[in-house]
Length: 311
Image (spheres, rainbow, N blue to C red):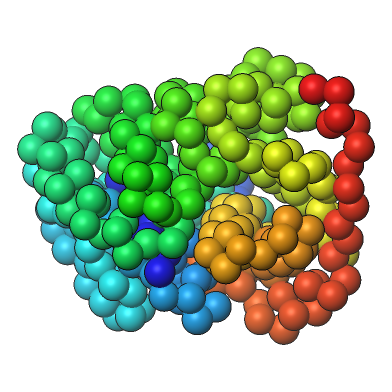
């Protein structure tokens, strides 16, 4: 079983417009709304679609929290969200039909108090005993210690689970001290967090700070993996335009699924790059095109990267 952690769960509202014009007034052609979101929830959606057993946990509160729970139930996802005081956040995505570009507005969300965190860690301990992989995704709610992820990674590791950390900024850097099995930042996040200009150097820096392996997603250019077993580049067979958020979460889902069954790195990365590419044409994070996925699994290109031997 794979447990996903979304401490800052959200209700995702998606508007489709003909074209996004700054300062303009827009007629919304389609409202795709009231969908539970947050990166971990999206990862669980993809896992469920792949047929991999998964559980959603995190914090949720208020009327919005109830809508998030209702949607998880409708999606058939096991909900182990922990209640908190305060109203869960909403995110607003505006998708332009003309070019497929998405503009996203993310609320910060409520302040989590000590009681919410205690309630969460009490639920988390027993949950991870059954977990093969624990995925920790997204931003930390205000009010939580910046090393909250490190604490959860310690708990999960002690329970024998593999851990994947997909966050940015201080939550990523302070989470590394927990020693995650895998850190999965995107190119911007890894360069911002480390201050390096070069992704390989940045990956080496994250490993020096505690990540066992690093997989950096480079958008349309695929993935770069730096692991104890070697270094690989995985490239999708074609460049696709669409929704990049969903692609990152699909990538994490594929990595989690592969790690849970001990798949070797090249196969794991081929699947991950194929699944993330298959998610790009879908407007909703958590969806992917199953036919494209099967096609890309056979056509994606993975090569060993030898530049890393002098780190």
